[in-house]
Image (cartoon, rainbow, N blue to C red; front, side, top):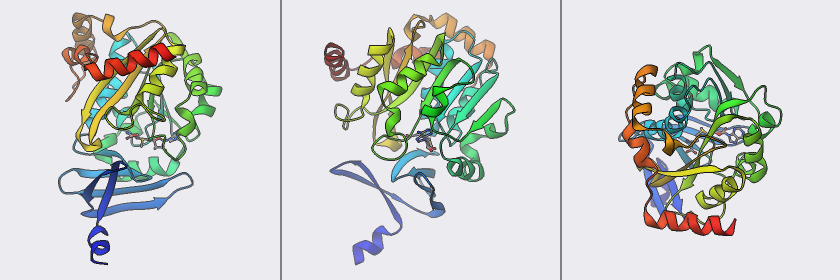
Length: 297
Ligand code: SAM
């Protein structure tokens, strides 16, 4: 009883079966079961605003910019002039905010299945979307990302896949070969895909995981580059993947990256041209895991 009372004002973050973390809910701002998932937004004194979907932390104000810059900029700076972008998921607007910083981006389709997530984030998380929801370059679609890519309105220079974890909820089918095939078909010949592929420390070999996403992508794309980012609020090193039919993020020189960053006039807190290259330098355990996956695919 006492324990129950104590935990009432805490969010329990299940990093893995035997590793739980507690986040104090200092003020509950939103709590609603939508048609697709359970959505909560609360304030925590240390982390700032926190978005939780189906009990998984989606972002915290303190470090959301690390995640969003890492998802968007390595891909968009690899492309010399990305103008048409699709974001699959990303209903909080953080990836959108970063993509719109590139002035060459002329059109972004934000395809999030859950209109209520987008509306709640628009109202309660202006620190995250930073007004990007009102940018005239954005087209909102509230439908399953798979349906969108089955019949896309055009081909994209960048597809940024910013989905909830695949353990439950509506994103499960989107960590799969059929979905990545659709994404490949929807890319221009020089287009790039980037996605978050989950924890690089916990469950990284089993189920929908970095290894699984990597295996599928390498069976479809000639260029697949995994990279790692430390995201404190996710309680782990996080794995991202970039894939492309033609452009290799490692073949873009530092000079070209510096030039693109200056020409596009982009200010960042996390991404730099030097970091771009460093991100793809991987620790041994990770390289070995991917080597095994490659052999088995
Ligand atoms: N940064 C995040 C994380 O930690 O996983 C992802 C954030 S973003 C809020 C995830 C979004 O994916 C949610 O708003 C959810 O509605 C959306 N989503 C889930 N399944 C989807 C699907 N099948 N098609 C489109 N959007 C989907």
